[in-house]
Image (cartoon, rainbow, N blue to C red; front, side, top):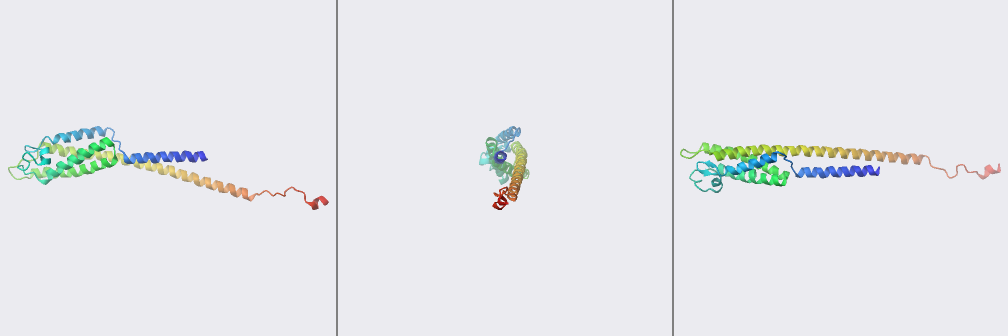
Length: 213
């Protein structure tokens, strides 16, 4: 019985260790290759024109005619969000496989997707005489949306695995508690049975009165 408790404790410790590992890490599988390609596409979009002759790098650092093109705040916000979250945190999440970094990449890319919509809209409604959205801006916006989708799938898949591990751990703990309770009841029953039939030291002994008779 002691060996069974030892085996259950070892199994419980193994499941808890696996749960902690799952809680910290992600397993993107083939999506890692897709995310890596999207990150490189997004980086390449910064050398393409985002509006007129102004490239993505020019939008980031307000250089090479960015001011003359009447670039608004949405374009700059989108460019920096895409660079920091969709590129930076995506690369960190792929290299470290940390769930927290993947979640940050997802949240930042989602915000960048909304900012990209505003950036495209701001270039479409710019004053007459200024260029509209360039191919680099469109490619960057679509790529950020795709990154948001794939990171959402990775984070959701990790959540499902974690929930399964937690359910398995709860089932093992419940089985252990049931066996412990049954063992306790059995031990109490054995103690009660031994106490009801005490051995009398004088049973079978001949008394002096019986010998005189």
